[in-house]
Amino acid sequence: MFRTSLAATALVMTGLPAMAHETGIDRIAAFFEGADIVSGPSEVECTLSGGATTSCFQITVRPNPPDYTPGPWCPTNIADDAEKGGIWFLDGKAVEVDGDFIANLAETYGDTEWQLFDKDTGEIRFTGTLEACEAAARPDVDPDYQNYCVQCQPEYLPEDASVTYVIPMHPEPADEPQPTQMGSGVALNGVRLDGPAPLDAILGAHTIAPFDDCGGHVNTHVGYHYHAVTDCLEGGQATVDAGAGTLAEHGGQIGIAMDGHPIFAHLMADGSEPADLDACFGHEAEGLPYHYHAGAAGSNQILGCLKAQTGCTLEEEGGTCDASRRRGPPPR
Ligand SMILES: [Zn+2]
Ligand SMILES: [Zn+2]
Image 1 (cartoon, helix red, strand yellow):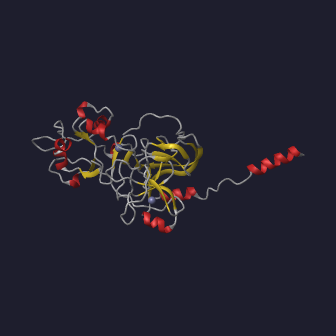
Image 2 (image 1 turned 135 degrees about the vertical axis):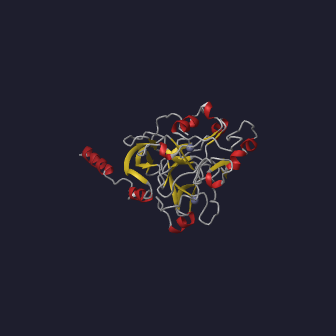
Image 3 (image 1 turned 30 degrees about the horizontal axis):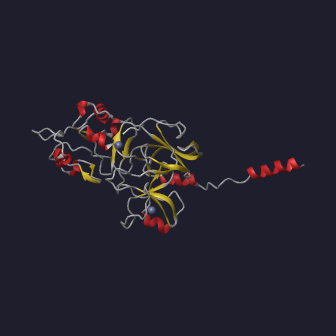
């Protein structure tokens, strides 16, 4: 009898309701309403970077912002004004890539080997084909593409190109903050919020790979992606419980980080700096659980680090996420 009652007790224990999951997936779906969705979001099991097995949402999106057309990136002549080009990160600031900027590169970087334009015609050398943009964007830049303005056009990618994100529904603590090299997160319009662009490698080959005015450019691995958060991203409803007043002050959530924490704009709605951000650019506010604020647009850091265990970016829709396995270096 004693044994039986023990067993009965165990049954009752395991029969207890798990932590309520509310309707988290509906919130995630509402958040990504403005994205070009291929499938999802749906709830899946996942293994995070620190080995935690938990519940994630999985969403497959095309990297096309539905509300604007990406570009331009490279101006074509040194006489071009800022409308013909994008932006670049210089000394922590976002600066216009116009004809003058290209003409003055040698002076700007104190290196006479910079020569991106034809001295007679003023025409700027830029990558105009898929092959050229791939060769120029390799970590070991093809010597033929030294001194080029590097851009990949979105139409170089197959029309059905998509990226699948697997992100924890509820953040799981990590032993230490995670680097953002594998990506910072995904914006509410379905565009990847990337880690830092490898500026030293790009500049070392005497190339510039401009971002458009929204902070994005294209590679052939994930398509259009952001290296800066600008006012192109208008905040949407939050994926976490938060007081309406706090949310109004924060100006709406612009993305979800790879560890499941929400991301808000760099500045508060009134233009002030958020207070007491940690090294990852996160903090807690009254009525709002831990969340990030994107770094300044020219800082080349959308997030400083990821506070909790991260999920996965998958290149195939049907894959499963085990972020605890080591991976190769990320594409740029
Ligand atoms: Zn905040
Ligand atoms: Zn990039």
